[in-house]
Image (tube, rainbow over all chains, first blue to last red; front, side):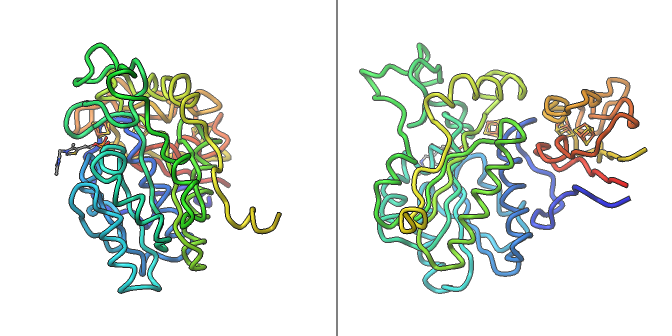
Length: 250
Length: 70
Ligand SMILES: Cc1ncc(C[n+]2csc(CCOP(=O)(O)OP(=O)(O)O)c2C)c(N)n1
Ligand code: SF4
Ligand code: SF4
Ligand code: SF4
Protein backbone atom coordinates (compact mmCIF):
# COMPACT_ATOMS: atom_id res chain seq x y z
CA UNK A 1 0.00 0.00 0.00
CA UNK A 2 1.18 3.51 -0.79
CA UNK A 3 0.73 6.38 1.60
CA UNK A 4 -1.62 9.01 0.17
CA UNK A 5 -1.74 11.21 3.27
CA UNK A 6 0.31 11.45 6.44
CA UNK A 7 1.33 14.13 8.90
CA UNK A 8 3.55 16.70 7.23
CA UNK A 9 7.28 16.85 7.97
CA UNK A 10 6.72 20.58 8.32
CA UNK A 11 5.10 19.90 11.71
CA UNK A 12 6.85 18.73 14.85
CA UNK A 13 5.49 15.77 16.83
CA UNK A 14 4.31 18.10 19.58
CA UNK A 15 0.57 17.82 20.23
CA UNK A 16 -1.17 21.11 19.59
CA UNK A 17 -2.91 22.88 22.47
CA UNK A 18 -5.78 24.14 20.28
CA UNK A 19 -9.37 23.34 21.22
CA UNK A 20 -11.02 20.39 19.42
CA UNK A 21 -11.80 21.25 15.79
CA UNK A 22 -10.10 24.66 15.87
CA UNK A 23 -9.08 25.65 12.35
CA UNK A 24 -5.68 26.91 13.54
CA UNK A 25 -4.55 23.27 13.37
CA UNK A 26 -5.82 22.88 9.79
CA UNK A 27 -4.09 26.05 8.58
CA UNK A 28 -0.84 25.07 10.32
CA UNK A 29 -0.96 21.84 8.34
CA UNK A 30 -1.48 23.63 5.03
CA UNK A 31 1.48 25.94 5.64
CA UNK A 32 3.62 22.97 6.74
CA UNK A 33 2.63 20.92 3.68
CA UNK A 34 3.40 23.80 1.31
CA UNK A 35 6.83 24.40 2.87
CA UNK A 36 7.56 20.68 2.63
CA UNK A 37 6.39 20.42 -0.98
CA UNK A 38 8.41 23.48 -2.05
CA UNK A 39 11.42 22.08 -0.19
CA UNK A 40 11.67 25.23 1.95
CA UNK A 41 11.66 23.68 5.43
CA UNK A 42 15.41 24.12 5.93
CA UNK A 43 15.33 27.81 5.02
CA UNK A 44 11.90 29.10 6.08
CA UNK A 45 11.55 31.43 9.06
CA UNK A 46 8.09 31.98 10.55
CA UNK A 47 7.02 34.74 12.92
CA UNK A 48 4.33 33.96 15.51
CA UNK A 49 1.73 36.37 16.88
CA UNK A 50 0.16 36.87 20.26
CA UNK A 51 -3.15 35.03 20.37
CA UNK A 52 -4.07 31.38 20.45
CA UNK A 53 -1.33 30.61 17.92
CA UNK A 54 1.33 32.12 20.19
CA UNK A 55 2.90 28.67 20.59
CA UNK A 56 3.03 28.00 16.84
CA UNK A 57 6.82 28.06 17.15
CA UNK A 58 6.56 24.67 18.87
CA UNK A 59 4.49 23.20 16.03
CA UNK A 60 6.35 24.15 12.84
CA UNK A 61 9.60 22.30 12.18
CA UNK A 62 11.24 25.28 10.45
CA UNK A 63 12.89 28.17 12.31
CA UNK A 64 10.39 30.32 14.20
CA UNK A 65 10.52 33.65 16.02
CA UNK A 66 7.98 35.08 18.47
CA UNK A 67 6.95 38.73 18.09
CA UNK A 68 5.12 41.02 20.47
CA UNK A 69 1.42 41.62 19.85
CA UNK A 70 0.77 42.79 16.29
CA UNK A 71 4.42 43.37 15.47
CA UNK A 72 5.07 40.19 13.48
CA UNK A 73 5.28 42.06 10.12
CA UNK A 74 7.90 44.44 11.57
CA UNK A 75 9.94 41.55 12.99
CA UNK A 76 9.57 39.65 9.70
CA UNK A 77 10.79 42.75 7.85
CA UNK A 78 14.01 42.73 9.85
CA UNK A 79 14.50 38.99 9.39
CA UNK A 80 13.90 39.16 5.65
CA UNK A 81 16.30 42.05 5.18
CA UNK A 82 19.06 40.13 6.96
CA UNK A 83 18.16 36.84 5.23
CA UNK A 84 16.91 37.98 1.80
CA UNK A 85 17.04 34.46 0.38
CA UNK A 86 15.00 32.82 3.14
CA UNK A 87 11.23 32.50 2.85
CA UNK A 88 9.80 34.52 5.74
CA UNK A 89 6.16 34.39 6.85
CA UNK A 90 3.95 35.78 9.58
CA UNK A 91 0.99 33.89 11.03
CA UNK A 92 -1.46 36.24 12.74
CA UNK A 93 -4.99 36.33 14.13
CA UNK A 94 -7.51 39.13 13.61
CA UNK A 95 -6.90 40.74 16.99
CA UNK A 96 -3.15 40.63 16.41
CA UNK A 97 -3.17 41.79 12.79
CA UNK A 98 -6.28 43.95 12.38
CA UNK A 99 -6.42 45.65 15.81
CA UNK A 100 -3.15 46.28 17.66
CA UNK A 101 -1.06 45.38 14.58
CA UNK A 102 -2.96 47.30 11.90
CA UNK A 103 -0.19 49.85 11.38
CA UNK A 104 2.55 47.23 11.08
CA UNK A 105 0.73 45.14 8.47
CA UNK A 106 -0.25 48.13 6.33
CA UNK A 107 3.24 49.57 6.30
CA UNK A 108 4.92 46.21 5.66
CA UNK A 109 2.61 45.77 2.67
CA UNK A 110 3.17 49.35 1.52
CA UNK A 111 6.92 48.88 1.63
CA UNK A 112 6.44 45.79 -0.49
CA UNK A 113 8.32 43.63 1.99
CA UNK A 114 8.99 40.29 0.34
CA UNK A 115 7.21 38.28 3.02
CA UNK A 116 4.06 36.15 3.20
CA UNK A 117 1.33 36.82 5.74
CA UNK A 118 -1.19 34.16 6.77
CA UNK A 119 -4.11 35.99 8.41
CA UNK A 120 -6.53 33.96 10.52
CA UNK A 121 -9.93 35.66 10.58
CA UNK A 122 -12.09 33.90 13.16
CA UNK A 123 -14.14 37.02 13.94
CA UNK A 124 -13.19 37.03 17.62
CA UNK A 125 -10.35 37.22 20.15
CA UNK A 126 -9.87 33.54 20.94
CA UNK A 127 -7.06 33.47 23.48
CA UNK A 128 -8.40 36.12 25.82
CA UNK A 129 -11.90 34.70 26.02
CA UNK A 130 -14.11 35.88 23.18
CA UNK A 131 -13.92 39.67 23.04
CA UNK A 132 -15.06 41.53 19.93
CA UNK A 133 -12.47 41.68 17.15
CA UNK A 134 -12.23 44.17 14.28
CA UNK A 135 -13.69 41.38 12.13
CA UNK A 136 -16.63 40.49 14.39
CA UNK A 137 -19.86 40.50 12.37
CA UNK A 138 -22.63 43.03 12.96
CA UNK A 139 -24.98 41.47 15.50
CA UNK A 140 -22.46 38.79 16.48
CA UNK A 141 -22.23 38.39 20.25
CA UNK A 142 -18.91 38.70 22.06
CA UNK A 143 -18.06 39.14 25.74
CA UNK A 144 -17.50 42.86 25.05
CA UNK A 145 -20.63 43.06 22.88
CA UNK A 146 -23.16 41.03 24.86
CA UNK A 147 -26.04 42.27 22.72
CA UNK A 148 -24.12 41.78 19.51
CA UNK A 149 -21.85 44.16 17.58
CA UNK A 150 -23.57 47.49 17.08
CA UNK A 151 -22.52 49.20 13.86
CA UNK A 152 -23.32 52.69 15.15
CA UNK A 153 -21.12 52.15 18.18
CA UNK A 154 -18.25 50.05 16.77
CA UNK A 155 -18.37 50.31 12.99
CA UNK A 156 -18.63 47.26 10.76
CA UNK A 157 -16.23 44.36 10.33
CA UNK A 158 -12.86 45.29 8.81
CA UNK A 159 -12.29 43.79 5.37
CA UNK A 160 -8.56 43.19 5.27
CA UNK A 161 -8.25 41.71 1.76
CA UNK A 162 -10.18 44.59 0.26
CA UNK A 163 -7.87 47.03 2.06
CA UNK A 164 -4.65 45.19 1.25
CA UNK A 165 -5.54 44.97 -2.43
CA UNK A 166 -5.48 48.78 -2.60
CA UNK A 167 -1.86 48.88 -1.41
CA UNK A 168 0.77 49.14 -4.15
CA UNK A 169 3.38 46.94 -2.46
CA UNK A 170 1.03 43.95 -2.21
CA UNK A 171 1.39 41.64 -5.22
CA UNK A 172 -0.98 38.85 -4.22
CA UNK A 173 -4.06 39.00 -1.99
CA UNK A 174 -6.54 36.13 -1.63
CA UNK A 175 -9.26 35.20 0.84
CA UNK A 176 -9.78 31.47 1.38
CA UNK A 177 -11.41 29.14 3.90
CA UNK A 178 -11.02 25.59 5.17
CA UNK A 179 -14.68 24.80 5.86
CA UNK A 180 -14.84 21.95 3.34
CA UNK A 181 -12.43 19.96 1.16
CA UNK A 182 -12.75 22.03 -2.06
CA UNK A 183 -12.10 25.24 -0.11
CA UNK A 184 -9.26 23.62 1.83
CA UNK A 185 -7.62 22.59 -1.46
CA UNK A 186 -7.96 26.17 -2.75
CA UNK A 187 -6.51 27.51 0.49
CA UNK A 188 -3.44 25.32 0.09
CA UNK A 189 -3.02 26.45 -3.51
CA UNK A 190 -3.20 30.09 -2.43
CA UNK A 191 -0.60 29.60 0.32
CA UNK A 192 1.65 27.81 -2.16
CA UNK A 193 1.32 30.62 -4.67
CA UNK A 194 2.17 33.19 -1.99
CA UNK A 195 5.40 31.37 -1.11
CA UNK A 196 6.29 30.84 -4.77
CA UNK A 197 5.90 34.57 -5.41
CA UNK A 198 8.10 35.31 -2.43
CA UNK A 199 10.81 33.01 -3.80
CA UNK A 200 10.59 34.99 -7.06
CA UNK A 201 11.13 38.19 -5.03
CA UNK A 202 7.81 39.51 -6.32
CA UNK A 203 6.65 41.39 -3.20
CA UNK A 204 4.22 41.15 -0.34
CA UNK A 205 1.56 38.41 -0.37
CA UNK A 206 -1.44 38.24 1.94
CA UNK A 207 -3.66 35.18 2.46
CA UNK A 208 -6.71 35.59 4.70
CA UNK A 209 -8.23 32.35 5.97
CA UNK A 210 -11.84 32.61 7.12
CA UNK A 211 -11.64 30.45 10.24
CA UNK A 212 -13.58 29.22 13.27
CA UNK A 213 -13.30 29.52 17.04
CA UNK A 214 -15.73 26.83 18.23
CA UNK A 215 -14.99 27.48 21.90
CA UNK A 216 -15.75 31.19 21.98
CA UNK A 217 -18.53 30.90 19.44
CA UNK A 218 -20.17 28.40 21.79
CA UNK A 219 -20.67 25.86 19.03
CA UNK A 220 -19.37 22.41 18.16
CA UNK A 221 -16.64 22.27 15.51
CA UNK A 222 -19.11 20.95 12.92
CA UNK A 223 -21.73 23.62 13.80
CA UNK A 224 -18.97 26.23 13.58
CA UNK A 225 -18.10 25.25 10.00
CA UNK A 226 -21.78 25.64 9.10
CA UNK A 227 -22.00 29.00 10.90
CA UNK A 228 -18.89 30.19 9.06
CA UNK A 229 -20.42 29.23 5.71
CA UNK A 230 -23.79 30.84 6.41
CA UNK A 231 -22.68 33.98 8.25
CA UNK A 232 -19.05 34.78 7.49
CA UNK A 233 -18.72 33.94 3.81
CA UNK A 234 -21.44 36.43 2.72
CA UNK A 235 -19.59 39.18 4.61
CA UNK A 236 -16.08 37.99 3.68
CA UNK A 237 -16.39 36.70 0.09
CA UNK A 238 -13.70 34.23 -0.95
CA UNK A 239 -11.53 34.85 -3.97
CA UNK A 240 -8.44 36.51 -5.40
CA UNK A 241 -8.46 40.23 -4.57
CA UNK A 242 -5.20 41.09 -6.25
CA UNK A 243 -2.80 39.28 -8.54
CA UNK A 244 -0.22 41.60 -10.07
CA UNK A 245 0.96 38.87 -12.47
CA UNK A 246 -2.53 38.61 -13.92
CA UNK A 247 -2.91 42.36 -14.16
CA UNK A 248 0.44 42.54 -15.97
CA UNK A 249 -0.46 39.81 -18.47
CA UNK A 250 -3.81 41.37 -19.35
CA UNK B 1 -9.48 -3.66 0.65
CA UNK B 2 -8.43 -0.81 -1.66
CA UNK B 3 -7.60 1.67 1.06
CA UNK B 4 -6.56 1.75 4.70
CA UNK B 5 -7.14 4.55 7.17
CA UNK B 6 -5.30 4.56 10.50
CA UNK B 7 -5.87 6.88 13.43
CA UNK B 8 -3.28 7.91 16.01
CA UNK B 9 -6.13 7.67 18.48
CA UNK B 10 -4.18 9.10 21.42
CA UNK B 11 -3.90 12.44 19.57
CA UNK B 12 -7.60 12.63 18.59
CA UNK B 13 -9.79 15.35 20.14
CA UNK B 14 -13.11 13.97 18.91
CA UNK B 15 -13.98 17.06 16.88
CA UNK B 16 -15.82 15.06 14.18
CA UNK B 17 -14.56 17.18 11.27
CA UNK B 18 -13.30 13.94 9.69
CA UNK B 19 -16.78 12.44 9.94
CA UNK B 20 -18.26 15.65 8.50
CA UNK B 21 -16.26 15.43 5.25
CA UNK B 22 -16.20 11.64 4.64
CA UNK B 23 -18.13 11.07 1.38
CA UNK B 24 -18.90 7.49 2.45
CA UNK B 25 -20.09 8.38 5.97
CA UNK B 26 -17.95 5.66 7.50
CA UNK B 27 -16.10 7.76 10.10
CA UNK B 28 -17.60 7.81 13.59
CA UNK B 29 -16.48 8.49 17.15
CA UNK B 30 -15.86 5.18 18.89
CA UNK B 31 -17.79 5.64 22.14
CA UNK B 32 -16.46 2.34 23.48
CA UNK B 33 -13.01 3.94 23.79
CA UNK B 34 -11.85 6.94 25.81
CA UNK B 35 -8.33 8.12 24.98
CA UNK B 36 -5.80 9.63 27.38
CA UNK B 37 -7.05 13.13 26.57
CA UNK B 38 -10.56 12.06 27.60
CA UNK B 39 -12.13 12.04 24.14
CA UNK B 40 -13.90 9.30 22.20
CA UNK B 41 -11.52 8.94 19.26
CA UNK B 42 -12.51 8.70 15.62
CA UNK B 43 -12.56 5.36 13.81
CA UNK B 44 -13.80 3.84 10.53
CA UNK B 45 -16.84 1.56 10.71
CA UNK B 46 -16.36 -0.41 7.48
CA UNK B 47 -12.95 -0.11 5.84
CA UNK B 48 -14.18 -2.01 2.77
CA UNK B 49 -16.27 1.04 1.83
CA UNK B 50 -13.34 3.47 2.03
CA UNK B 51 -12.26 4.98 -1.30
CA UNK B 52 -8.97 6.37 0.04
CA UNK B 53 -9.88 9.98 -0.82
CA UNK B 54 -8.00 11.25 2.28
CA UNK B 55 -10.61 13.96 2.94
CA UNK B 56 -10.78 12.90 6.59
CA UNK B 57 -7.01 13.16 6.93
CA UNK B 58 -6.74 16.51 5.13
CA UNK B 59 -9.17 18.29 7.42
CA UNK B 60 -8.00 16.76 10.73
CA UNK B 61 -6.56 19.69 12.71
CA UNK B 62 -4.43 17.36 14.81
CA UNK B 63 -2.91 15.23 12.03
CA UNK B 64 -4.33 12.06 13.56
CA UNK B 65 -5.05 10.24 10.31
CA UNK B 66 -2.86 8.37 7.81
CA UNK B 67 -4.39 7.10 4.55
CA UNK B 68 -2.91 4.37 2.36
CA UNK B 69 -4.11 3.10 -0.99
CA UNK B 70 -3.31 0.01 -3.08
C1 LIG C 1 0.18 44.48 24.26
C2 LIG C 1 -0.89 43.47 24.53
N1 LIG C 1 -2.19 43.85 24.52
C3 LIG C 1 -3.17 42.94 24.75
C4 LIG C 1 -2.86 41.64 24.97
C5 LIG C 1 -3.98 40.65 25.25
N2 LIG C 1 -4.24 39.78 24.11
C6 LIG C 1 -3.67 38.56 24.01
S1 LIG C 1 -4.15 37.71 22.65
C7 LIG C 1 -5.18 38.98 22.17
C8 LIG C 1 -6.03 38.88 20.94
C9 LIG C 1 -6.04 37.54 20.31
O1 LIG C 1 -6.95 37.47 19.28
P1 LIG C 1 -6.60 37.06 17.81
O2 LIG C 1 -5.42 37.80 17.31
O3 LIG C 1 -7.84 37.20 17.01
O4 LIG C 1 -6.12 35.55 17.89
P2 LIG C 1 -6.92 34.22 18.31
O5 LIG C 1 -6.61 34.03 19.77
O6 LIG C 1 -8.37 34.40 18.00
O7 LIG C 1 -6.28 33.16 17.46
C10 LIG C 1 -5.12 40.04 23.09
C11 LIG C 1 -5.90 41.27 22.96
C12 LIG C 1 -1.50 41.27 24.97
N3 LIG C 1 -1.13 39.99 25.16
N4 LIG C 1 -0.55 42.19 24.74
S1 SF4 D 1 -10.08 29.60 21.82
FE1 SF4 D 1 -10.85 29.55 19.71
S2 SF4 D 1 -9.10 30.15 18.38
FE2 SF4 D 1 -8.30 29.60 20.42
S3 SF4 D 1 -7.73 27.42 20.25
FE3 SF4 D 1 -9.79 27.50 21.11
S4 SF4 D 1 -11.14 27.36 19.32
FE4 SF4 D 1 -9.10 27.90 18.55
S1 SF4 E 1 -10.28 8.20 3.08
FE1 SF4 E 1 -12.17 9.15 2.30
S2 SF4 E 1 -13.66 7.48 2.23
FE2 SF4 E 1 -11.96 6.75 3.49
S3 SF4 E 1 -12.59 7.23 5.59
FE3 SF4 E 1 -11.39 8.98 4.88
S4 SF4 E 1 -12.89 10.41 4.04
FE4 SF4 E 1 -13.92 8.42 4.24
S1 SF4 F 1 -10.68 15.27 12.67
FE1 SF4 F 1 -8.92 14.40 13.75
S2 SF4 F 1 -9.10 15.12 15.88
FE2 SF4 F 1 -11.07 15.47 14.89
S3 SF4 F 1 -12.25 13.61 15.38
FE3 SF4 F 1 -11.29 13.25 13.40
S4 SF4 F 1 -9.37 12.23 13.86
FE4 SF4 F 1 -10.10 13.13 15.78
